[in-house]
Length: 175
Ligand SMILES: Cc1cc2nc3c(=O)[nH]c(=O)nc-3n(C[C@H](O)[C@H](O)[C@H](O)COP(=O)(O)O)c2cc1C
Picture 1 (cartoon, rainbow, N blue to C red):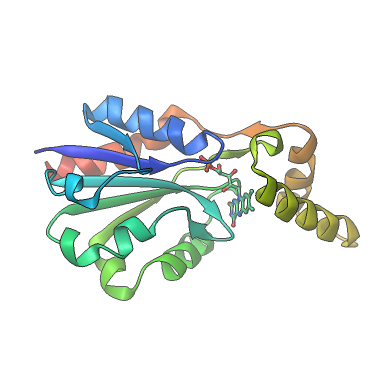
Picture 2: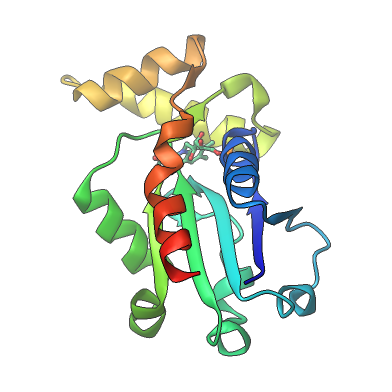
């Protein structure tokens, strides 16, 4: 069975997971930039990884817009956000990014990434500055919000190789 890992990563967290996953599965790996959808047709299992940006999975259109071409494949998607894993977050992400048919077909995993303000592009820096401003004006902050504020000054990296175990187990089970 041929497996490919494709990913889109802004500051490197998703890239790190994508590399670990590809190594573990001896799979091919490509960044999605300039990658033609036809290239994916050579594979039986497609693993897509993208960062979470306002609950949207970065670049997921590549899978969802081409779903009719890909639905005879095993599709696995992982998203990496700065927030800790929570069931509610998982459902919110699935509902925002996939329609019902896609939710049934696509196996989804959340692999916690990190946050590094210094690596953001200009637009994301502005967006995150606005969020910082909003958080600073709140009278009470949740522990996650406090963590987020602290991360502006000191980058956080929650990527751990063990986080990929369930995804690897799943892919090996469909081989
Ligand atoms: C503009 C912006 C929006 C974000 N939105 C979310 C979010 O909705 N949920 C979350 O958990 N993390 C969010 N993050 C954090 C990123 O998902 C996190 O840094 C992720 O690890 C990025 O992976 P990448 O650098 O490989 O793209 C956001 C970051 C930025 C800059």
